[in-house]
Image (cartoon, rainbow, N blue to C red; front, top):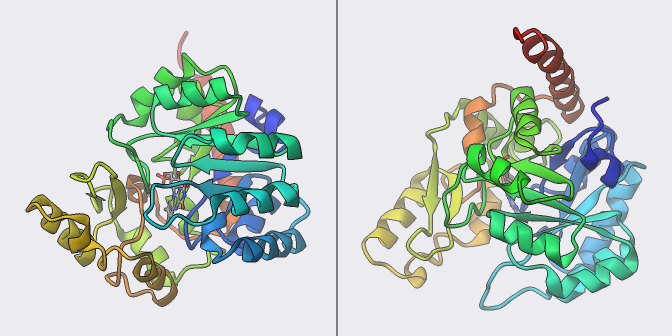
Length: 323
Ligand SMILES: Cc1cc2nc3c(=O)[nH]c(=O)nc-3n(C[C@H](O)[C@H](O)[C@H](O)COP(=O)(O)O)c2cc1C
């Protein structure tokens, strides 16, 4: 057991989170994470409608009796999904915790509070973490530049971001971005976090509902094999480097506009990568942590390994250093 403020506040056994992942955060993975004693998040917007989300929550409950949460990602969009309706499904389903991300969660907090749903807010800067803390969220997930998905525009890696945030954050905080093993967990605890959040590492597990070629690609890839898209649009995304990501970067670097890449970056194409295993069909998120991934274990094996090795690192490596 490794008890931290995070495990105490969120009622889970291990200080490990599986963050929301578009197309990946479904009941198969989230229930496996819950059954292994960590905190998994279903991804609300992977479900086509709020009604489908309610069914996915029920399906996950059939697969585990342990706590799990739902991720609500709020991103600027021309035709936004019905966020308030997804939020109400989350509140009414009484999952114990929601992971908010992408935008200031203020508008949604009263509904979550009224329903007794704790809020873990994921953000990529100290100032946004402080703002969320002031708004009254229950925990912060601080996501460094290494991460898959949206690292923000500040480009601050975890080695600086985590301790800088820890100086200002008094509520439980998990460190995110670039974590894949026990070394990362112990480092995060030393830097002032109460646990870790992982995305990319969980995609390469037996239960992740994605094609095996995606998992094998994560094992084969190095830390060099990600690419930052949408930099000129100030909406940066870290993705697996492939034919499409390279084309998108090239078009935008030559002065292209979003309309010039709209079809290339369509979510439906990224989804097909996970379904078919054709790695060049579209854009799919992956983080630098892929350079640390060597296998495709069952989730329970991964979590058990991280916890066992973390305890060994704490006692044998840190504990044996001369005073
Ligand atoms: C395939 C994939 C899809 C993701 N989709 C989302 C998402 O929809 N919402 C979100 O908040 N984060 C999303 N993320 C980010 C993760 O929740 C997490 O913050 C990130 O992966 C942490 O960095 P790591 O990949 O280095 O562990 C995604 C990550 C991956 C790998």
